[in-house]
Length: 266
Image 1 (cartoon, rainbow, N blue to C red):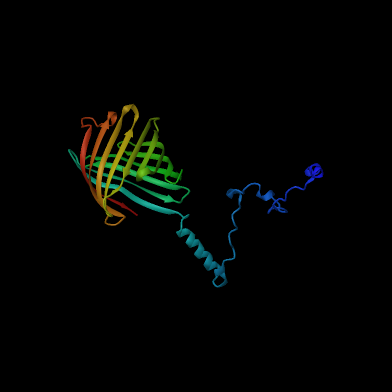
Image 2 (cartoon, rainbow, N blue to C red):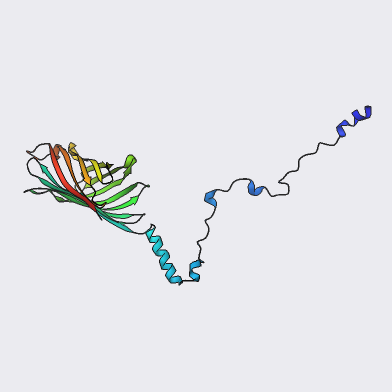
């Protein structure tokens, strides 16, 4: 018994479980590799179809496929408003639209708008030439020049935006610096309420602010029927009110018009 007590501390240690990773290099497992650090696989150059068809024919087919699936230039010409306005006093005609050409990285944009009073000529008319760049999945930044054609010829430098806000609200706005150093701004918002697959109710609000407290506010409600997606006649009601210097001398500050028009694009 005494011998056992003296040699108790010399007893062999209990057996340990074998390490499953013994003999393996653990340095590669010290930290996970980031996905961003993993290089992409090389673009394949040994196309199987070229074993049976001409390489030049297959190259043309792949180029056409890439064009049809995005990345290529596109163009649109659109008339958002092309309408007759029946109102107290002189009736009027109004037009507003834009055209653009380009791709995903940038676009060239031309915008035009105007309003003509019956028997009095163009009350206002303007055209803009802009360059647009995407600043996100839903918005473009635009910059360029604007030229007023009526009632006075005047040039502006402009910077603005255009895009789709939450709840499918289409918005756009711009700030203008005239050749006389005057600053003005304009913004508008619209939304399509689809009553049926072809019948759409479209509220629209536009505000314009100029120097010395001058401004203009317009609200409209248009009901259009899409005969095709590219051609839709409409009827509606528009209320407009001018403030300060934008109010024509001797005329009412506000007016209401019943409108009949068409919206089209190509």
